[in-house]
Length: 423
Image 1 (tube, rainbow, N blue to C red):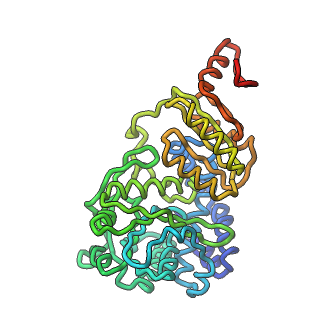
Image 2: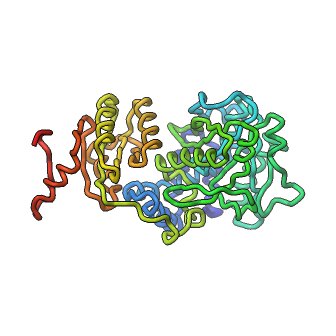
Image 3: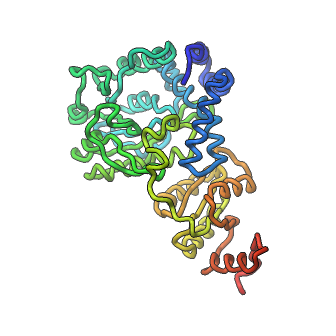
């Protein structure tokens, strides 16, 4: 994706304070990429629109994708060049309460938001991580070789024998199972959004990601299930000039399928929250299949109920609970969180989206206001009739059926607005 002429920009950014380095990389990379990165933007935008069904979000994903991936590459350079103290100062960890005591664990992730800095986070907290890593491929341009070698050199330096080579460029004599490391009290890091066949991995399980059936590597999760050790999903992002590693609630099960489904649910949440940070868009059909291979079409018979939300947790809970109680089973409930500051509300919305198949949570990265949030919900309605609610509305039984009857009472009716619950 990047060319040799992009390498000096990464090196310059690595010499700046973290906040400035990330900002320079995000802004300058798309500007210097020319038609090549504009082509990448078009591809990513098209793929994101197909899988997310949200065209404004897909536009933003295409626009921000190259800068996000470039910041991930910058982390590879700074991991190699920066002293440990500077790396530590530029890193923030969320979800420490989800970490098990240092010892045996599997940390599972996708290529979402530059999770490369997780090694510093875990080492600082007493874990002894190992990682299944594909060695740098021979060939490629100078940029790709330099970034890959910087990453692998850092891993060798901080993990030593904890680097477990996989893939077509790993010599057969160097391939080792993570089982002994886990048995000896170590932790294993597994990146799962890869094709098992491409890495020569035979142990795979099927699950669903973004509405599609997908097979993902399951070896590390099978080890965790057999040993009874927790699996902790994690992802990453950049916020206020620092790399943030977020640990999701840990998953414990003796069933590897349950572990995989739990990890994928956490990762899909992260992808939908900040889709521009997922590297998978560039070749998404290789992982998830073409449109013709998609699962059967979702039902569009019920309405899309759009609720823009910004804080006011008590009102939101009463509103949403009334919608859940009285909306038909085929409704799509689109909750648009307009950058709420209330962490408890955000967590409640996350849990709701995970529990109820009718609920889809859309989250704005910054506050955009009621109109923009409503328009985002409309764009995600996928051809359904749309019912827009204020987040302090309490709906009665039959509210959808009564509004639908009013809207279809005459051929010329385009909008129906209720003024009372009676009548």
